[in-house]
Image (cartoon, rainbow, N blue to C red):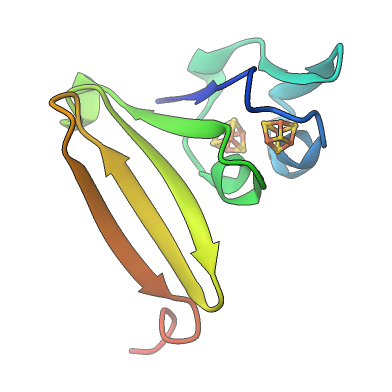
Length: 103
Ligand code: SF4
Ligand code: SF4
């Protein structure tokens, strides 16, 4: 599992580095970098924190993702997961945070 950081979009705010439980992300020259991407265990915290959607999660073949990229966007209580497929399709999954813990 791994993330990818778009250095052009990144504004160097450091939010991703602050939430990474493995301290895998560092800010160097005002840009976020992940030194050892293979150490990422895919908690997705950095993806949800990034205010400019610069962090994407890579769904490799090992988990059946065939190279899709995932990022999130927020709108009120809705957390939207966007999956960009290699063929250009985009799948959107909306999670209402207020409802997500109800059983
Ligand atoms: S997905 Fe989790 S473990 Fe991986 S880099 Fe982001 S915050 Fe760290
Ligand atoms: S949260 Fe996003 S914008 Fe901020 S440092 Fe990380 S990648 Fe860059």
